[in-house]
Image 1: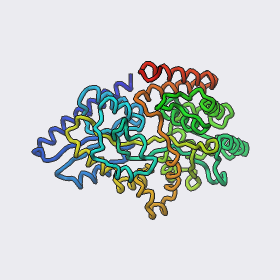
Image 2 (image 1 turned 90 degrees about the horizontal axis):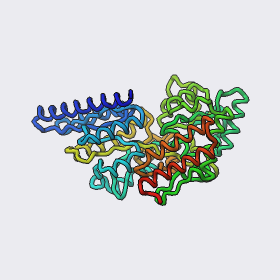
Image 3 (image 1 turned 135 degrees about the vertical axis):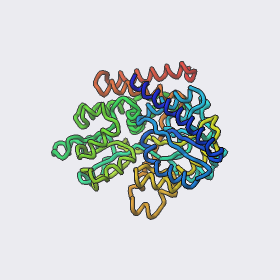
Image 4 (image 1 turned 90 degrees about the vertical axis):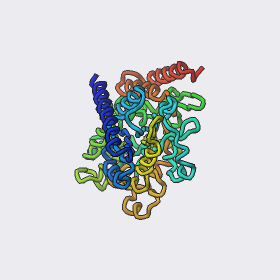
Length: 423
């Protein structure tokens, strides 16, 4: 109920923005195009300086406004969909999570971008940032950051990070026995999208696959699928992760690691900048690597956000100009240096001065080489919800890994059958 009220308040605010924008255009004798993008709260805050720079450079031609949405990914999606279902959305563009693309494109809400970004433009992107931008042969999304799952570890507690799931358990137990940390490993165990990201890295790490969308083959109740769920459950049952990890999102995991409570943390690139701040108990003692896995199977979930232009916008060219500016090499450097957002442009990763000042960039590149998208399907939100519900039951010992993953596989299959994608 509270979330619905929040969305209604935001929608009312968005329509006020639309009316004001129209009025602004009339006041300027229609010489200035007013363009607006809806972004999740962290990105809206992070792009404030860039918006000011854009408006300064385009004074008299284009005025860009970023509308601040909710913090959580699911709430952002609910807000965007609610706006689009009403008809003409009160914004020209949307900063979109990588998992939304198939659903939004299938619904016809997005403007194809291949007329504005060609193969040469795509070639400027680092490999891991090229995924999740196209659907059924059309480019709909241009990446603003190249998020991927990372394993953070304490360099003052070990000479090198673990490589396999068993290694992580053994190192964690040794450090806990020596009273050097309270917990071995903190991660996103709450019943939400972050848990799906954690699970994808582990099922792939054990040699499996969540869902092969080209053939609709479900791997949740396969041997690797069950092993991945059992390993996560075992972290809690063995005391390597706190039982409260089932309530952790990214901020909670970061806080635990930041104060020195844990030896390992699974999180996104933004956490690196947070761990370098003066209030971090582990500042200067943190390394990053790819997620533990069986040999040859390390995987990093892609979690990037990208800019899209909505179908029906009357300011497409001006919106594209804003997209190019917000994803430019200069903008990428600013977002990385100030907020820790991983770049998408290969030239930023190759910048000698930046690599010298921030050698962590090289580790980001290594993780991007094993980055993988979650299942690319318009049904993603439904199948992810099925997965997180069953994983939550497993992590809280309400079901065994076998029971939970069998239910997850069966329910996923039923969703595909109902949509006519499975026989």
